[in-house]
Image 1 (spheres, helix red, strand yellow):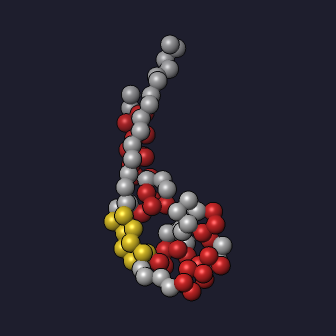
Image 2 (cartoon, one colour; image 1 turned 90 degrees about the horizontal axis):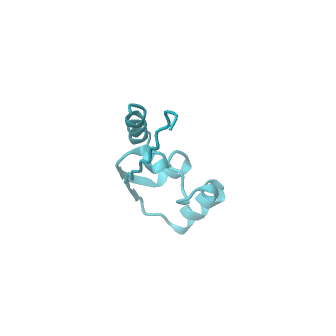
Length: 81
């Protein structure tokens, strides 16, 4: 009605992250920075927490929480309707 298009789209994206071995002291030092306190996964790969990442498979932005490439593709599809 009135040129309005009902659009519902959803997707998931997956990435795998492997942490290096951490000592209790390493973990305590990281917690002491305050960085993990506002993170859903208790670390920020884009910040100090990135130093603990040994290996990552997948999209960096997916790990950060918003898969930009995938999102932009989905938005382009929606806008072309």
